[in-house]
Image 1 (cartoon, rainbow, N blue to C red):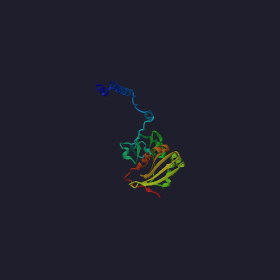
Image 2: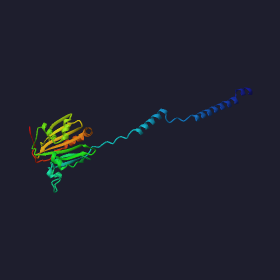
Image 3: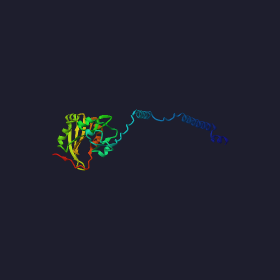
Image 4: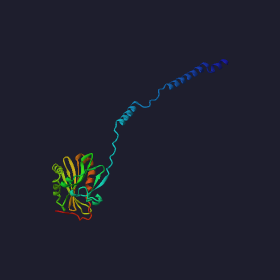
Length: 251
């Protein structure tokens, strides 16, 4: 009976071996867990992409600042004769005695017109862009003109006293002319000259027995850059004599 019980009882040797085997497997698993290498932070391709992006940021130039639209001021011109060069004296201001106005961009400089120049070709005022002196606007006038000549003749008459205008017309790719009237009935002739080296806008009118011609001109490179501003200057010119009747236009 005792022999049968001993045969049916679990063997201490087998139990010890099983326990030892399980313990060994747990130790091996723990060792394997400890020996696992750390997970890389990024793959090689990801690192290369990040490095390339950083390089582009360093090499890319900073964006250029946007150039704001320029401010404008109003110039009041008196169209004084050469004999009255330098003003009328007294306390009269240009604004009180002005015969015409036009806008001037901020930063443009006024060129002092000499008495000789005023007497020969009638230049009354001139402003220019200091970055490019050939980009400018100016006004000439002639006294004793009661009415505008035909549209086709006025431009040729202006060129007689302006050698630069003669050359520009001679080399022009296109010359356009038009006529407009303001709200008061004042008639203006308008010309656009697309020359080989420069572009010009001219506005001509008569008032107070005078012919006024306002010029806006610029080399083609500056015209391409500043066309909107230059057209605004052209449109800003007008005579200011509310008491004068509208000028008569010859047929």
